[in-house]
Image (cartoon, rainbow, N blue to C red; front, side, top):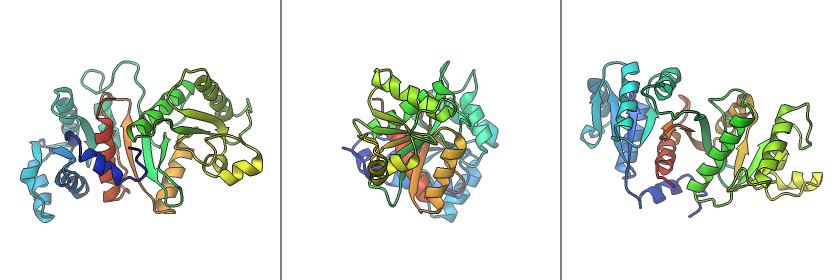
Length: 303
């Protein structure tokens, strides 16, 4: 089943065994309410790591049955992040979620060389799945939050994460647009040169499972009329499933634009660790947090 709306993830997960979420320093209402809603929908089992009294107080305030969620007591955020990661490593959880601790402390626990969730040589990246109000299907894109200026190897890794996410959403042959300032191969512009190399790698089978085209401007990636006017003939143009951004400024600006201007819903995870890791923005809606939980649960199933 190809998922074309974010709500459809709930339908798919409802037919599968429940994955176990572990939320680090989950003492805030937004996190607890999102986890509680996912548990109530029957799509996950929830584990909240944090101050037990604070968690139960939030549950009482919002009418949440604390008995439906496992609570693991911990009295500070750094220790809670380490404990959450440890639960994953012990096999007691299937994916991780950030609560009310800073992104830096959350990522530090994931990246810990001795007790974290990273395999040697792995590359962490942030993948977003959005449902833009004026586009005909979901858009999967990255990186908007972790790698400021990805080099060629990191761009290849991000591209593979986008493709993997698309496959988990039922898109057998996703169309990937490699964003650059111009559709011309201009050696002096790194985004253009890297996109041309990645396209050639895909043509030669070094990147599999997708149709990849680049360099492309944003107009060509999302608008068929622009491609027709410019004489660009590609299956990707105007019908992209995925977008690879050349740097964090481009990706983050796009992310915030579709949320704040277009009022679009989205979800996001960190990929590259041994398990999916939910990393939502403080400005994300509760619905987006719920969608992020669902996406991570989808990705927690092994292909």
